[in-house]
Image 1 (cartoon, rainbow, N blue to C red):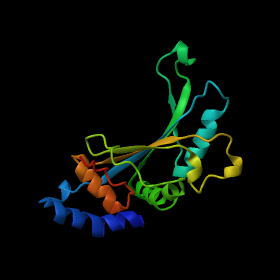
Image 2: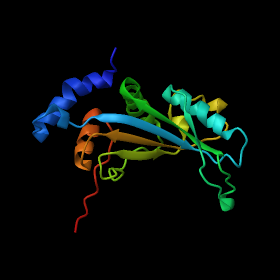
Image 3: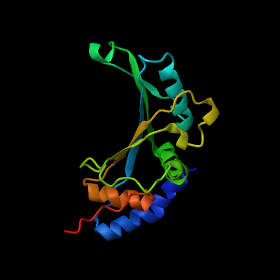
Image 4: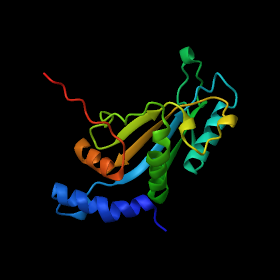
Length: 185
């Protein structure tokens, strides 16, 4: 069974974008390709920090995270080569749409004083990256079992060629983007 958000994309969002942007081919319509969730950890300070972060990330995404290791030794940061420094998960297809649906519907509204995400986080090629300061906004995380609050970066990768196409796609899918500030003067 397909994800609810994918069915919405196929039945409502794609035809609306095709009509609005006057695309001649269905392959020109932008779509989401993958979502990458990355959680960096300063493992030199705490023992077991990477394992705790990996456990939290697997609860949030439903997938086992890949452990990121350092490539070089940097003495000023007390970092050694091949030391675990974080974990990441790449979500595609149905898992991607399920995660995006949970992110937009339940997790982002739980952020304190949330007024929408910044519209300036596009990278120029149609991808959107934003940071979350704590993993406690996800309902899958048990607050009593959290050892330390950690932030994460979430990247939404699309096939859009420009930021404007990606913005239109994400707004149609329900992403809570703030209105850009218009300066008077």
